[in-house]
Length: 349
Ligand code: FES
Ligand SMILES: [Fe+2]
Image (cartoon, rainbow, N blue to C red; front, side, top):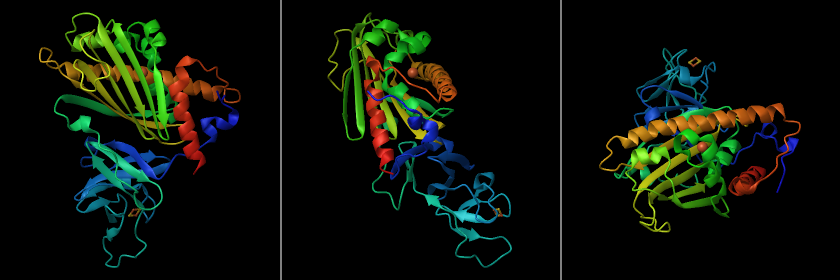
């Protein structure tokens, strides 16, 4: 088990895996105003133009005002200082009061795609090597979902740690989705991985459903509960849920019961700050109309509980940066594999 050293402290490592799609936000964030967002250290302005969504470097090529101070207009984005107008490719198409537009009047553009309500930005060399992944849950009529974009004063690795180790649920989320903390800590889990994916599965058969679950679904009594986490470099998908104990097979992907699908885009902003783009989708029981909205509201509380813990943890790792040795325990298997993947990819940059 590797131990952190001062060298491996995130404050000293500002590299990220590039040449891939990263989550830049959600489709509903782009309406009629530009949105400033720094992703992997690149300050960008995102906007929705007539041809679709676009991402440009957030710096006018005239006098460097952030383009995010401007306005979405006509074919693109107009700078808020002297009115240069840029199209979605970052090419200046109008200089008010001047007919001649210099060839160099352009700003860097980043490929941006909108897929199933998720905005994906390509950060890397040249044109994208592929297209960003689909997220079918967002377009599946069986599920209702809600979500939000959080900003974290903590490095992305700590968010990965948290999402890949759901044993924390019993302690951090005791009041919401928790249930019995000891049960969570002692639930057997399985970790598998390949080159860039880590999977952690935790079946919790014959357990007591937590308050969030019983509010959303009419369980008869005890439940067979599951938590399945799949880590990818740019995001995680987490499938949790429960069904009446003994009513189905935990190996059946189409099992009945109450399901929660979480999408978690974790995008570094800088080496020590992060964006966390999440949605939670659930199937609503016919006898519990409105339960999905209630669940999303509860999840917001839950995610604030995580944010409080992670930001406090990071503030302390900064305070103890000179010696932040850690003792590994049995729940760290998933997080450690993800860290190894991220370390290997950043070392290649
Ligand atoms: S700084 Fe943008 S137009 Fe002058
Ligand atoms: Fe959590």
